[in-house]
Amino acid sequence: MIPRIKSYQPLQDYQLLVSFDDGRKVRYDVADDIRTLPTFRDLETEHGLFENAQLDTSRTCIYWNDRIDLPSDAIYEYGVAV
Image 1 (spheres, one colour):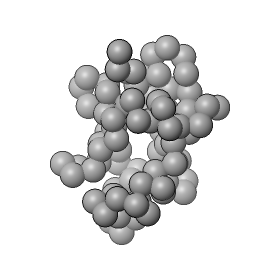
Image 2 (tube, rainbow, N blue to C red):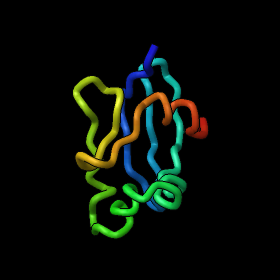
Image 3 (spheres, rainbow, N blue to C red):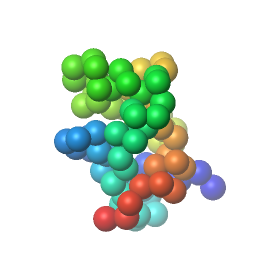
Image 4 (tube, rainbow, N blue to C red):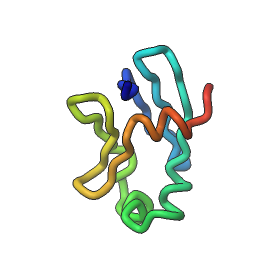
């Protein structure tokens, strides 16, 4: 089953605070993706882009534009529980 995102909040230093329907809360470090994935570098170079994260209608993906997105299962698995 794909975890559904209940809420999310962009934080400083390219961190996301994400809550899921099952009650799990994680902090996900997007900075790691910025360092390793070329398409994610726009989050660092385009002023204000990171803060404008959006949740898709299925609540299974946070995205910034048509090239940069994070599936909820990756956030769930690799995020640090808080």
